[in-house]
Length: 195
Figure 1 (tube, rainbow, N blue to C red):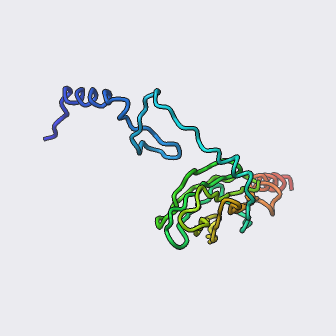
Figure 2 (cartoon, rainbow, N blue to C red; figure 1 turned 45 degrees about the vertical axis):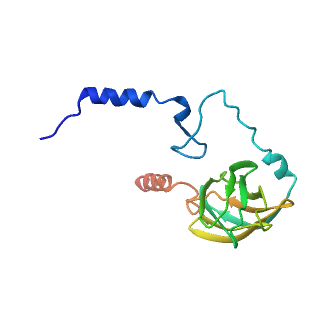
Figure 3 (cartoon, rainbow, N blue to C red; figure 1 turned 120 degrees about the vertical axis):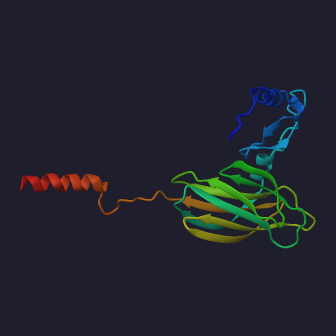
């Protein structure tokens, strides 16, 4: 015998859920898809301004270590500390915008999905936020794209950032026809009917 939930108990749950104090409500953190951290949502809480990453990043030389062609619209970048875990913190800058800021690099793999601008050069920069206990910031970067895997040793400090360029190519699926196969078939069928 199946029991149906009591309407009174459902209403009670609804009242409890909707009356959570605002300072305890979970909020979605940018870059995630679900509430993961409890933060005060009170508008009276003053937020500290974000550090001027882009201003500093433009003043640093970029050491481009890899230029790769890709046909995938999204690549997976993973980072792990290369050597001693010493508290390195980096930001990933993609095409001049901070995609992932203040990421701690340690013994756990960090995964980042990065969308490509189709038909253009896409630049990924590993920008050092700090130098950890033992400069420079070093990481093993792995890039999955187009069914391939690229492994790169990345190193950044306060003078130079590590960079990778992914040149996105739009794949032409019909190079031998000059048009889509359906158009070629329609043309040849109508021509054969005339003969």
